[in-house]
Length: 94
Image 1 (cartoon, rainbow, N blue to C red):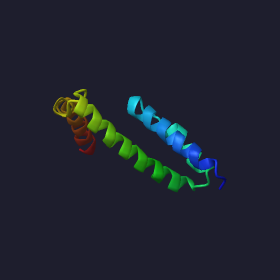
Image 2 (cartoon, helix red, strand yellow; image 1 turned 180 degrees about the vertical axis):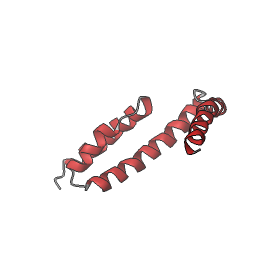
Image 3 (spheres, one colour; image 1 turned 30 degrees about the vertical axis):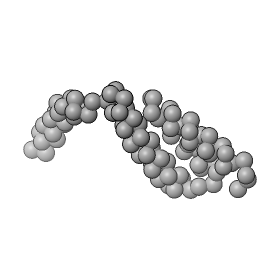
Image 4 (tube, helix red, strand yellow; image 1 turned 90 degrees about the horizontal axis):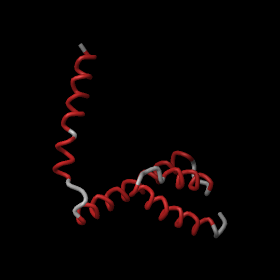
């Protein structure tokens, strides 16, 4: 692998992390680049998922610290969609 691929991957990782934190879809940058760098598609996808997990964890921590994210309110707002999903599943299984 050529030397210039590594700085390109690092720069794309920072850009994708920024995009994932704000809006999502940073994988549109990193996944093709990892495949272009020579990784098999399944390994590139797994590597990308680990990065997305880490970016999400850091973003949640920083948003909670700044007071932008209220987890208690977020979990409460999930009750209705989860209840509807459960009822739909239950009605289809009978």
